[in-house]
Image 1 (cartoon, one colour):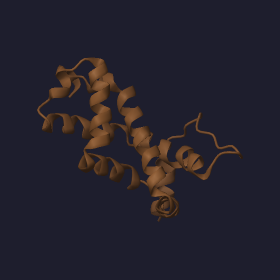
Image 2 (spheres, rainbow, N blue to C red; image 1 turned 120 degrees about the vertical axis):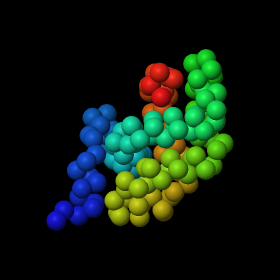
Image 3 (cartoon, rainbow, N blue to C red; image 1 turned 90 degrees about the horizontal axis):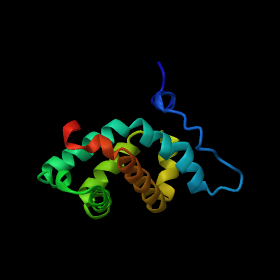
Image 4 (tube, rainbow, N blue to C red; image 1 turned 180 degrees about the vertical axis):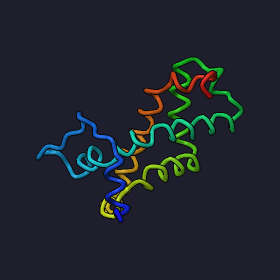
Length: 134
């Protein structure tokens, strides 16, 4: 039977632009090796969770201009700790045990990188967050 860690690693998409170079910091390597592939794997779930967040907040998002929608995404992730923690769980739940060990050694800096990646994913998929797709 395949181990959990092996299954997780096998499922992850490869990101050609996510390279690791000798002069990169450990956090940059973790971001490219783990955070970005996990966020890409979880993209559909991240979008669904955000759509649910919008519905629970009275669909105000759908009445906003594109610029205001981008601000809304930024504020939701930055200011709503419950929502932020939910997003972190979606990503952290896909870590291998070794990756989790690395993560807990520098969780504060890695959380910032993680949330930046999630924000970028939501923003880059903003057309999928339109009301007709909700």
